[in-house]
Length: 262
Image (cartoon, rainbow, N blue to C red; front, side, top):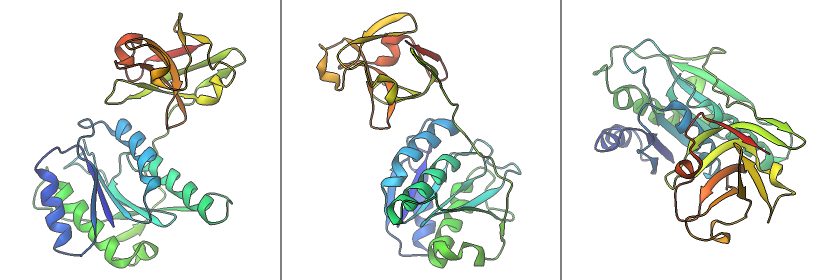
């Protein structure tokens, strides 16, 4: 299996698929081609949340504001998975999550090793479409060689130098937490970096969010329509939401904004 993720919309992903299918008979699965344009951090967050649910696969990721520059092309081995994409941090959080998942599935020990390789390329046909001309061929080659033998390819060199995107840590206090909004999903839920455990003793009560109180509920429909709530999403983090509405608008927050919970 090769999964594909990008910010391309349509029809550009079709060209990547055409290149891959010319080199391999891999099953192709689209994760999304509607990630926010050139938004490396948001894409990295969602890939961290989604890719660990796949069986072993090669994951092609192209959100690449630096296309055409001298940024490197990478292939990353994380447990039984491989990720292929630009060296801008977009692969790092998912790589860690995949390594941890494979370790938990096998023996519950330490996270599997992450190995990073730089993939050499010369004179791609286009300086603006490396998804088609650099990363799709690289993903097909990794699939054909196998995840365990990434380094056997020509021009594939191990490296310790790569952009390691790390999400900011919250500050957890006895009476709450200070964090920030990491992403806003399509429903308008503002997903923070504050761990859901902070709400452990608050279910059915209310908390202060940036100075305004809101109920704490396990489900959106636990409050009336159009009412604000604080909950824990499927990602395990605190999120600010509205039942049948947009939490980002109701709480007046966006990506990167501070969230003080107390």
